[in-house]
Image 1: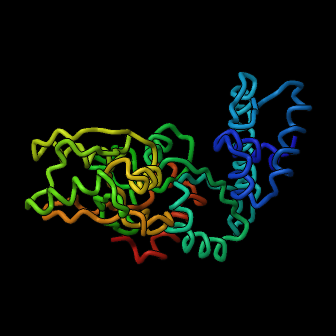
Image 2 (image 1 turned 60 degrees about the vertical axis):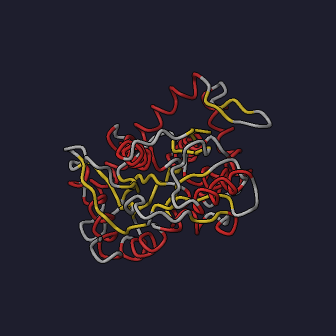
Length: 301
């Protein structure tokens, strides 16, 4: 059983989306599907439950995922052990949101590939709010994340850039926009009775919760969603107001569909960077990616 096939399966098990995995792996959707089918034939039972709308792991798939992770990790260790002293070789597991792949990581990965062509990046994507927990649980070597107010003691954080956290409302005329503009005309936007779309977890949720608490505001929560991209989309549809990093708004393709809400005492900017366990940084592979990221962004902010 080759490790490349296992890495394909692990990508699909992580994204639960054949199309997204094909993009990340630079393979066709049919090639990804064939690879998974061959593994299922070899195992002797389905690893994934598929229908027209979703993909999920079967019980056998969940067990096989743990096996695949172990085999790939052991292969990486062997490659490092047998690799040339003059050239790093192996694999680094990296977690980030889809937006971060091109808004934050693109220049880092370009520089890293040039410096260490024998090192493979195994990228997993999802909600940026999960980055820190995935690092603490040992699922990935490095993650792109916002910096939390309290950094766990065994974790290291490399700041790369800052992005303003923007309160936004629908750009199109609708009831929500009229409510916000009426409050602005009265001199203050207090968000009382205005439907608010908030992150369901993560650094920005904590920042927003603290902001509301400090001002004694009890917002009317319309929805709690995963991912800033989803917040921007729901705001653009006129379902409520929300917050998102300016970086996400600009990269979402929906910047013209939302409008900023000017506030005199808004949220502080979000510091975005890499996080990793201190013990993982002892690996030359992980440290090399860390160092290239720092050099690419001028050693952070």
